[in-house]
Amino acid sequence: MNTELKKYRQPIIVGVLFAILIAILVWFVIDLRQLHRQGDFRMNNPLYRHRHNASNPLMLSAQIQSWMTFRYINYVFRLPVNYLSDKLNITDKSYPNITLDKYITTHKADRAAFIESVKQAVAAYYSGGSK
Image (cartoon, rainbow, N blue to C red):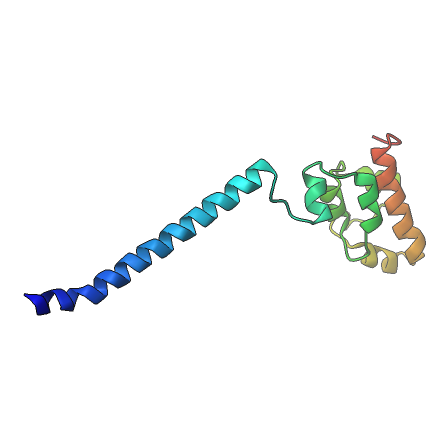
């Protein structure tokens, strides 16, 4: 009978260690979710903070870059779909699914000036200029 116990001892030990590992993993996930809900565990990403109203959108408008599409900018800054097209007189049929870079190239616009105008339009929306 002693040899029978020795034969099952190793699988029992492995099973117990596996169960402990699973319990620790479950505890870790539950703890992270609780910290996130309490607000103690937040991403240090400005766009994340913006979506959760933890930062000033006017400061974030400075982060607009030419690789972004108008649709992306509308989403991130919670702008009405046609706000930028109306504000900047954009009549391109690809709007809002065109990047700023492609729009600038297609319409032979000044890159720095156009991107600055987009930033100013977003800032104007949040300062009450054109809601």
